Image (tube, rainbow, N blue to C red; front, side):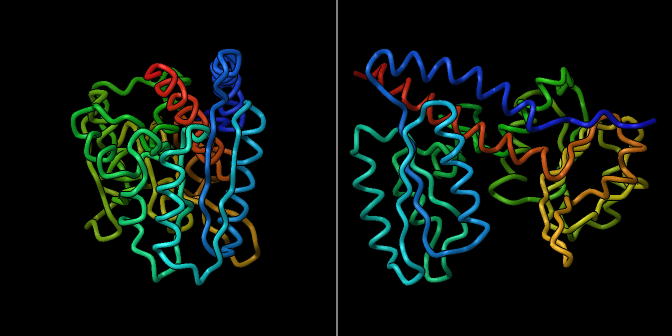
Length: 285
């Protein structure tokens, strides 16, 4: 057996094309979707992510702004800028690039973002509303994973989904979104005893633990769908996921690569959420 490789780049292009038509209609009606990204400091990875987001916005017709602050900026300065953007009619989505410097309290900063502009899905309202299935904007990475499954006609209802990782960004919201769609859920962490015993039971295995190549072929059920959310910089400069791609591809039924898997989908779902926010804003006028 050799797994079907899920091409995140191709899927991301397809989704962006679909949503560009939404953006074009909004522009025809006099409302261009707008995204503001706030970045503090000069973290190289964050800077690359922000550039990629700006480029993606241009592709689909979203106006984008980058608000950069120095590493020593105060939390109050950043919060003041967010409050300005909350009332800026040209901006429909606000994203704070994480991680923030150590002297920031990330949860406090994110809580200031208007719920209607929280296109990253990190505001406490949106995170909490995942429990009832009524979130305004789902977090972009789990949302991207759901779209990957849907676009590949992978049934979720009735499946046993195992999530390795319990972060607020991926693990917890991923579990809630799969649960909402009828899956039976197991959440594992780096401290889980006999992790392989759990992962081998998974019909859908989502890995976001931050340890390169941690999941090997012996830990995967034959034919399982394996979604690798991890991205790790190796000593030689190459990128590796949390899944040992070469061995797992001989066991899994579907598998995402790193890079070129979940990453492009995350950015695409950010664009979708921003355009949806602009549609909601137009409906309120």
